[in-house]
Length: 254
Image (tube, rainbow, N blue to C red; front, side):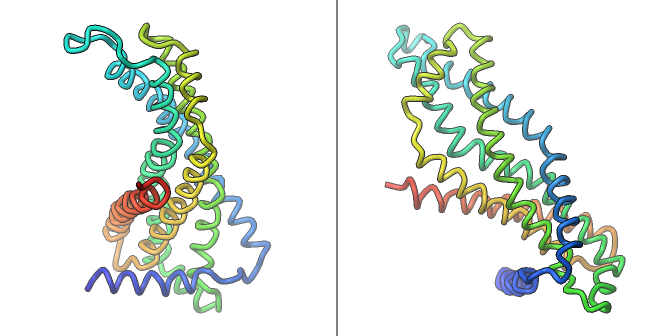
């Protein structure tokens, strides 16, 4: 019953949140601040994770597919296949899913804790007394900011994943940069980019809406604020993986 209770309360929360702002000037200033908090302050983490993940994926894929071993002493698979695997996995899975799982821990926990602190300090109650739609005021700028900047971070991550693979070719003799680029070009399909962007927008909404909901319904004290952040991250990760499976089945399932 807890699932259905939470689901119904979440639907009512989103119905209350998705209202036209009462003061566009105030909304605009908050939106810019949230875009900075969610996007710019997460950029360094996204850059580091994308570059190192791309490099590690390239090295491991090359080691498993084209490096001679006792079982296969001769090379059976062309080297450009490594570029094809790294490029496809980066676009379809590593850039959108891994990046958003990382952002769930950083952005999701921050949003839940920030709104939770406002809840327990009775700031949200004060908004209601002043006739302000509190859910829309505290959550809507965060949701729209996330939908704008998180897909942008995912696009940046995708390029850096490939760049990390290019860097990895400098440290391994099994693969050259030309092999990597050739494989990436051979398998590139615009449909993959569309799937990546669909995942990006859905995951961005999941991260911001669930964390806002979890913070908005925080009760009691500071301990519960920490628990709200933990619950938000856990639920966000579960829903990201669930919708990742659904989207893959819809667009790529046979």
